Amino acid sequence: MLFREGNRLCLGLQDQADAGILTVDFFDSALQHRIARPLSSESLVKAMGSRPKATSSHPLTQGLPCQDASAHLIDATAGLGQDAFILACAGWYVTMVEQSPLVHALLEDGLKRGLEAALEQGNDVMLTNLSRMYLMPASDSQQILQDIPQAAVIYLDPMFPEREKSARVKKNRYLLQQLHGEEAQGENLLKLALGLARKVVVKRPLHAHPLNQIKPSGAISGKTARFDIYAGAGVGGAVTQANA
Image 1 (cartoon, rainbow, N blue to C red):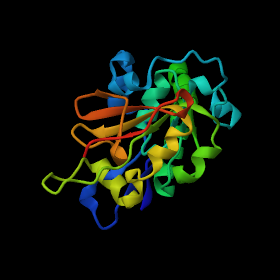
Image 2 (cartoon, rainbow, N blue to C red):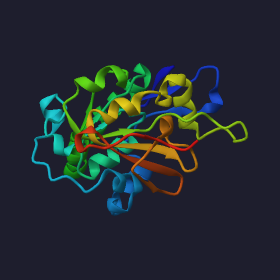
Image 3 (spheres, rainbow, N blue to C red):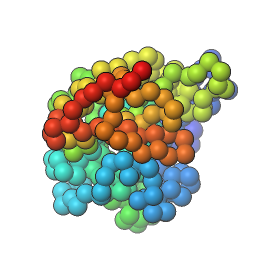
């Protein structure tokens, strides 16, 4: 259920109050702390490669995704947009795709509030970072990826089924799982992405099998997640099956 809390759009499960609420806030103190440090140390940023030297104007001022393929990154499973924001702060022009209309509404609200706050505060750094983020209409990535301008990298962060022995996953992840269902586990999305970008990066739990059992070209591991790196069709990357 969507509701307003102050000026923020929020989302909660009516029959599961203990699951918490979702909202998008790019001025959140934890996010601000992350971007205050050198982003080159972030595993997420390392996995995407060197920061692009883009000269394109801000996508949001054009109302279109970035047309400069060398600096364009597609986050095909945007969720609450935190990874997209970090990547925008690292210099990428990020097009976000989110299939859930409810989560999409949170993203749209968070971007709007973030830009308004940056303008009001005269915070040019945040204004530039947020302006590098473009949100597509609510869509399934498998249906819309081929209609988005070419990108250097496609990033996938599919849902991962909760293990039976584990405690309830982090609240925001749990809520997203309930909203998306099994279709958000990335089935067939990786093979599609490999044909559309020179590089595909997939976020996985540290000890999980590769997505769809497709062996990556390499991987970068952080404290809680692993980023599998694939060579896409643009650079002649081969797709091989991982050992079970």
